[in-house]
Length: 404
Image 1: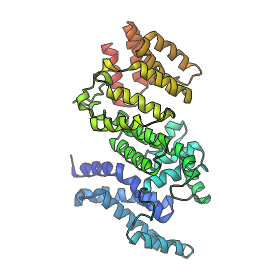
Image 2: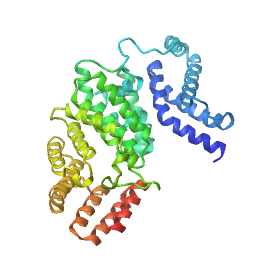
Image 3: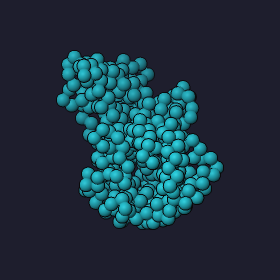
């Protein structure tokens, strides 16, 4: 690998963790969303120019933060007279020690930024899009694809959301009292998205690690909210399997074929303790119980599928979405036989919510294979492989098509 290629890889790896931290810190200090993002981007660009020549610094994230902060100082010092007071306050904050405000030692900048992005003054889709872009650093083009709009339309939406935050004077802080409880569901959903982006087959593990860290902060901030603890439990139980999800060649290993000795049993124990203290309510609580069933089974054959099916029944009453219905069909297929699963899958497809969804085809393929129709199962697995975006998932589905 050339020096430039190695430096580019180091910048990319550092940006996963550092970019959201830098943007969040600079927004807190300056109150200027665009300025924070522009200066963070300039720091990344400067790293691409200098690291191949000077070498990757010992503290890459700290280097990027210093460069971005200095760039903000340069911009503010050249600000117009009309902005002098804001400029002076920001310069003082940037050049002073950045201690946490009194009474907020449990909160960090990214958690404040998540609560800002999830303010009810913003439309729900804008909240999700803005968080994906700012906290998860998802490229605008990918967010646009997920929302089925053009990249230019998504750029305008993100710009309007930032303007709305500025015009409405939305404070950059974690709220308290009723406002904190009101905003919690949106924040939990955002953390779930962040974790999923890291846990997906082709995801970046640092996102999952960050979601777990922020979930811990949220539990410390709101210990009386069971769904926050449930979400942390779910993350720990799911993430405990990460080391066993790929073989030596990088191929995905299905849950029933994973080496369970490679699982993180300390994380499983912590997750199980959290699950034991949960009341029987809330969708994350039911998901955590399902994850605990998988994590505590001594083998795939000893998995308590009837308990899992019951949990999905309870969850479907709370969230009757197509994806929950699909997972419910899987659980019933293993608990009560493939015919039961196919019956629920047919119900889940009513209304068209699963049309074109590759995992629905994969689930049907697995259930059909277990009924003995391997030719039809292989055709369904191939059809699912044509629709997925990730290479690892595509290879896994094609392997299933060949093996039956």
